Each structure stands twice: as C-alpha cells, then as structure tokens.
Image 1: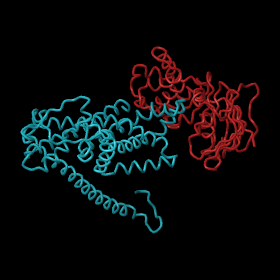
Image 2: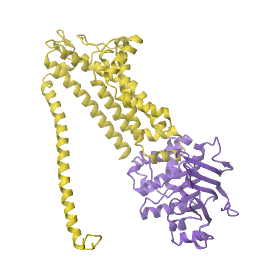
Image 3: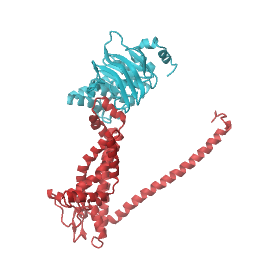
Image 4: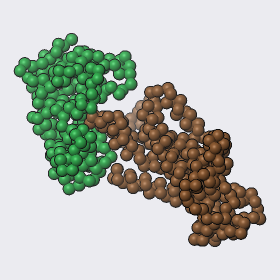
Length: 308
Length: 260
C-alpha cells in the first residue's frame, strides 16, 4: 500500500493497518467455516459408512453363492434368496423398459414447451408433486387400478405398471433438468445450421444431456428396487420355496422380491433367522450400489466421449 | 431516414427493406434498408447496442425465437421475402449460414461436427460425405491441423481452431451467404489474424456479412461497410470511402474515435 493516500477520514498511513484487521477477520472466519463444514461433511460420511459397515458386518457371513441363487427351504427358515433377487431384477427391468421412454418423452416435452405454455407449467407442478408422493400411495393406486379394476391380480405385470408410475415423475424431472443445462449457444448452432427443432433436440441436446438423463433413470430405478410399498399389494409374494420358472405365465403371477422379503421376514420373528435377514439386507444394498456404480461408469464414459 | 443504399452495377445477394425490430416494444432496429453485394465482404460496425447484431440475426431469422420480438419490413433473398409466411427455415438457413461470437462446436468429434449438416441436408454418406467434410475443413483453413485427429472431440481444439471448425461446419452445408457475428471477439490476436485472412479468402466465393466492433478489422477485411447507430443505418458504402471520406458527421466522429 505504497501509494495509498488520504481519502475521507482515513489518513495516508492507516490503510495498511485497516487491511490487516480485515485480513485477520477473514482468516478467522475462513478457519471457522472450513472446520464447521468439514465436521458436518465428515459426520454425514461416517453415518453412511457406519450404516453400511454394520449391515456388511452382520450380512457378510451369510453371503454365499448358494444364498444368492437358491430358493428358501424348510418353511423359509433356511436356504437362500434367489427368487427374491430374481424378482427384484425382473421388476426393475420391466419398470426400466416402460418408465424410460415415458419419462424421457415427458421431460423433453416439458423442456421444449415448458416455459411458453400454461398447460406445461401446470404439468411441471403436477409431476413435481407426484415425484414427492409417498410410495405407499402408488402401491394403493396400483392395487385399486391395475390389480382390481383391470383385473390383473397381484402379478408381475401389475407391479411393473405400478413401479413405472412410481419412476416416471422423477425421470421426467431429471430429463427436463438435464435438457435445461444444454447451452443455448449449442441450440442456436444447430438451428443456424438449418436443423429443425426436433433434429436439434435429437442430435445435439439429447446427446449433451444424456449422462444426466441416464443418471436420473438409474437413480430412480435404484430407489424403486429398494421400495417395498409400491409392490406390496400389487406384485409381491412372500412364501416361496420353489425356484421361479420364467415364461409368459410369469407376467400374471406374483413375484418374490427383496424389500418385501425383508419387511415380512422381519415381522415374523422366529421363522426367518436373523442372519438371513441381514444377508438379504446386504444383498439389496449391494444391488443398489451396483446400479449407482453403473450410473457413474456410464456418466464418465459418455462424458469422455463427448467432452474430452 | 436513409434511403435504400445500393451501389450501381453491383449484384445484390440479399436486401433488407424498411426492416424494423423491437424487443418488448423497445426499438432495436429502425427501418433499415440495405443491399448486401454478392461475393464481397460487408462489415457492419457501430457502437454497442446499435442493432448490428440484431440486423445480422434477422438475415437468417435467428431472432424469431426471442420472446417479445417484433419484426416488420422485408428481407429479400432470391426475390422472396424470408419473413413471408410459409418460408422454409431449413432452406433459408441452408443458404444463409452463420457463425457466432463465441465458438460453439457441438460436443462430438471434429468429423461429426462438420458431417452433421451435409448428412442431414443432403443425405450424404461414406466417401461422398468424407470428401465434403475434407473440403469444408480445407476451405476453413483447418484441415492441415486436424486431418490426423478427426475423431477427436471438437471441444479439445483451441478457441481459434474451434471457431474455424464452426466455419467449416457452416461451409459444409453449402451456403451462399455467410453471416458472422463478431467472429473474433473471443479470440487472441493470432487466431484473429487467421480468421481475418480466412474471411478475405471466403469473400471471393461467398457473400460474407461480418458484424464487428473492431474498426481496424472492418477496414482490413471488408469491401463494404455499414455504420449503424441507435438502430438506424447512418452510412453505407465502399469501406474505403466510409473510412476516408464519410458523408455523415456521426460516422466521422465514430471512426475518429470520438465516441463509442
């Protein structure tokens, strides 16, 4: 501060000391905030890690190839959770195949027409509300409409439809959000090249937004696969000892699945040994972790392809 | 009010007639009538907010999308008003290409950036497509730098290269008229020089219309110059005449650097 001069009531020699006081104040504040945020962040991470570690500790001894592939035996008191895993995967794949086109299309519509039309603004608000609706509501809706009204019965098909409804709102919202991150300059570039609006969307905006959209889909599925309530009254069966055979008739039959197995199994103490519950718990967590890992992989791969 | 400004014996590529633009009722361009000579470089200069970019973006209807915009008057191309009803925007933009102030390569490979247009507009594939891509990259003076890495992302290029990629992308669609909206203002001096040389070269085969806030640049690269102020076309003529012997005092003030 060599050239600072008198200004207002501050005298020439005073600037340095004023700045030093502010610097010290800033440093104190920085240190305080850094440690505060660090502590909160660490607590969150520890909480999650602790939870996973506890489940892994109790569940890992149960985990075996047999446990993952064999059906329960001896009145659910022994054996594995093979049918539950298969059922969960079946439910998820069906929901994925149905919810993805619907959700992405909805998100595209909202992103393209959202701001101009009042109808679309209303739709956005409705979808956002649906995304926050508790899963049990979807379960009851599915029971009333798909199971009873459409007479699908408690079946894989009814479960698919219910899970699809459950997944669509969040996929719509993440697709819309991902499309909104597409820089306007890229859209302008496409239009200036003479591409139609749909070509611009399809060729430029969607590829750009793809990592975000895929992440949204996978996270939504991850949530769906762990929820017991949407499939509670629509698709689930608890007592299975037979290996599931796949065929067209599977569509009309209920399926076992991990979250429902956990809920029911825990409610009937003494029947299902605790170690099986822990094992199933860990299996479910691993399944969702696998999905999330997939999401991260897809995202980094597409990003590398498009951006670096 | 300045009357339609044309020079005799110069073939006109595009022409605005009493073109006015307002954004939410605020006028941005006031009854501009201006003929752009074919196969020459025309520069549009003027202080910030004078409407030069607005004028440029009217020439391929890129202003249509802006909410609250109102456009009156005509823009004539091949004897047709491009603002007439039932004008095919794809056809218009195939003929009138555009590059922007900030390079905006698509997030895809260099080849794909250039191939996208000819593939969608002309259905080209394989060998024919490769030839068009190479030709466009050569015309944009980028081929030698990227010919061995056509599969690399367009975003991996430097700013100046990205801008030339955008020019190649535009040329690949086979336009006749090239609109450039301050194409060098985001670039360093060396890249700027390359783009300027490129514009001069392109001016021999294409009708080039360049918006620039850089007066020296306008003087270096253009055959004709239009000077806009407060949304009005103040002066238009051959570049040398506009710079050395302007007819209006506002032009003189601006060029001498008295304001703007």
